[in-house]
Image (cartoon, rainbow, N blue to C red; front, side, top):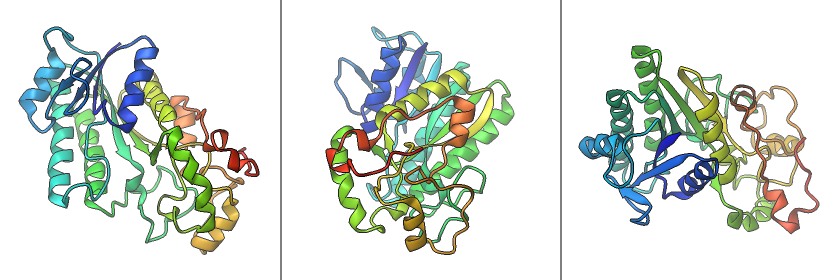
Length: 290
């Protein structure tokens, strides 16, 4: 396919672009930043630029088959709340609207684990968390991600042929980040904010590829995380210490992810291949997830 990737110069975007190209796709990177020879610079808050860049760019491409929308302010606190809302909400509407106007019916969009209730100052309804309970945005950034999902729900209602897949990515990590992980064991509260979750960027890119290939018409949402937690300490110990009284649904495993990826495995065929435990020798005593 010929695929437009917004935000392809970001932490996850770089790996997504590389992975999709390695799979034989033609990829167009639309971003404010990046090498000018490989990136078409676009302000996603300007609808004219967005639709023009997706429709075609001289010497680059003459249109695309699918869109992967990753472009956004990627976390709370990077900008003011108002700036975060205006940038991210408008960018997503512009990308979705441009796709509709151009007849592009396959979109994969970056949602966020934050819609699950992060930083879990109010405990989750149960552990492991999954996609079954209503969104609980606790920041402006998270609120926008929730509204983006709601926007997608209405757009696919208008056009039953349209496919929009929201991937609720956990905290994106590259292998260089893993050296810090063993230090998390000393204080279980350091990473309780996302139930000790993470996602290797290479597995995040795999999820994008799976969604492009396997998602059906309509809207769906999927938690995308690694198969394990960032901790060497066992899940039962962590949950008892930090979230006492929260109902446990099923077997926690020893170090299995507490951000359930069962749905992504079942529907998309997603299967994480990378773990920080493979990268950090200090983790030799840790237990691999089952």
